[in-house]
Image (cartoon, rainbow, N blue to C red):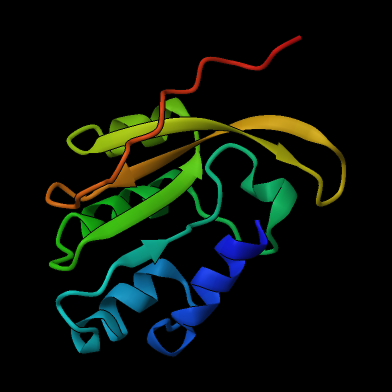
Length: 134
């Protein structure tokens, strides 16, 4: 784990973080991001966003983000909670689900989905989520 963190840290000068709403970032900043940049978006969760965030999206907000994401020219990844509505909004793109353990407020297990742009090469794609052991 330490080696992985050190490897990511070695790229720090090449990493930019924007603490902005995804729609604002796509509208205001993306045109200034180099074409070869990997764009990662982490919008508020669909199903449980109200429990985790002060500002959440309604369905139409998620739909607007999905439409905007489809126009991004750079390679991109979007992560969400694994909700049928999100799967449908991004149905034309590759999706990979995976299990996560959360511990921010209370410990629980959940499933997330990563959505990938069409031309993004994903080395060693992970095995699909198969559920948690009892």
